[in-house]
Image 1 (cartoon, each protein chain N blue to C red):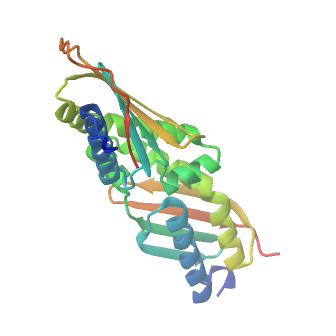
Image 2: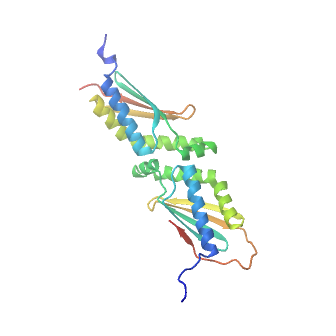
Image 3: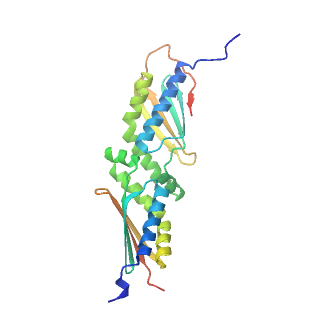
Length: 119
Length: 134
């Protein structure tokens, strides 16, 4: 069996989960009802079941979902260096690229980190 | 001896009530209210100045240099709540609002809400100075 495809140790997953959630709460003002972290091979996938802010709920109720999505995605770009640093510290590997997206129905965000080969 | 107590003017009471109600609705619909609000009331307008308005998410975007997204979201939010804000001002002043203009200033961390009234034809209406709610 190839070690490259083994799941990461639970400490790595727990650290990413804890730190991503902490940064999200501090920098966005809301948390997540659940966080799912998968580290397999060269990829780290973080799925956050995020909570809407009252402003976002007001906008969605007014039919302005696209504004909520745009703001969330702008936030994810803004916070990318911080999220990347969390993953690099936890895994001990450099992040080669970061993709982020938000889905409103059902509500969650997905952050995908591609790691550079181990040095 | 003349009393130093001065009852608030009618305009002052109306201004305070507008400030209070706008802050309350802002807090309910946006998640946090401004920490300071001041309303100036004239014959044909009410001007609310709300200070310290940005949420943590907005502060993060501003720090990252994406003020444009904050402005865009605020415009959408103000369009969504225009009816509620206008109703407050009409209810408190007894005047009809013909236009609502809203904007935020990023560096100053403030929002202004301007309500223009339809002409009332009331010769007794006066242009009193604003009252402040803190």
